Amino acid sequence: MAGEVSVAKTDWQYTDGTVSNVITSTYAYNSYTRPATDCLVTFTYEVDGHFYGGEFHTSETYVEGQTITVGYDPANPEKNDLVKSEASNLLWVTFMWITRISIPAIFIYFLLRRC
Image (tube, rainbow, N blue to C red):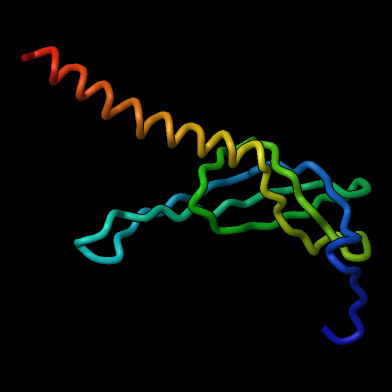
């Protein structure tokens, strides 16, 4: 917008935000692909006693009440950006690998046990 002053994202401040709503949609591109999941996540955060909000789309799982890190422009706190947590990404990747390894291993165990 004309006349609007903003700082570079490197100068942004960070605060905790709270997930206030999650709307999940599942869809398939066609009958040959796996269904994809899209979540619309709405969140709120507080700066100097004022509350602000935002939303983003993701395929990751979020729950209402979850704490997230939000970056915001101190010159205009309504401008925000979600800061993805490396720890939550690592936890998700670990969970996916464990389930992808353990489920086939349990299946093979019971299959071999029947023989």
